[in-house]
Length: 254
Image (tube, rainbow, N blue to C red; front, side, top):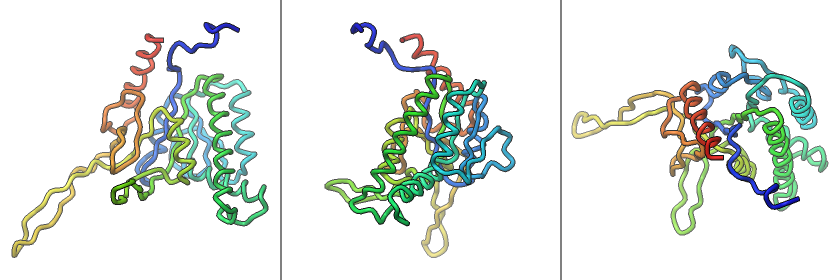
């Protein structure tokens, strides 16, 4: 082995790792169904009416999920995008698995957060398998999640709330670090004030277009290594243009 053989010369631009989270019903699964040749791992059982090929896993256990990843890795197919819908439901499966292996009824029963540390180990195993699938099958990976209002503890400042991924904070942090883009699906809403009677005012909401936020803000968690604009219209064709431009640009620099 030589230094030349082991030094990586550029970023892996063939595939992308996307975490997409947002409010329920905003169209996250529909958006992902427009990706190139997607296969859904349907843990949530919420794909009714969406035209996409899927593997039902809503009644699966952890090993059943891992076996499905193994099939996607080992068998010949022409799928180009792997969609896990959703990772917060997958986390429930992982927590049940931890409880089973530790012989407890609730993961919170394990002292000093040991249950959540064990769950994080399983998240890391899944990430490793997803990376192997990406490398072997050249598949993009989209992880869908629900949004939750989380409290942010800022040292030296008052705490505040913002939108984040509906996962235990250890799992959310690991998947956020792993992703190339963490996108918050939301409504593009702005408010104005209208004068009322007797000096009173009221706030009026306007807009309502669906957008993806790609830049981290105090109001929401986000990440962007793909050169995406912010905000970006929640349209997969529009997103795909930017993604393909990024891949082309990075391949040229590799």
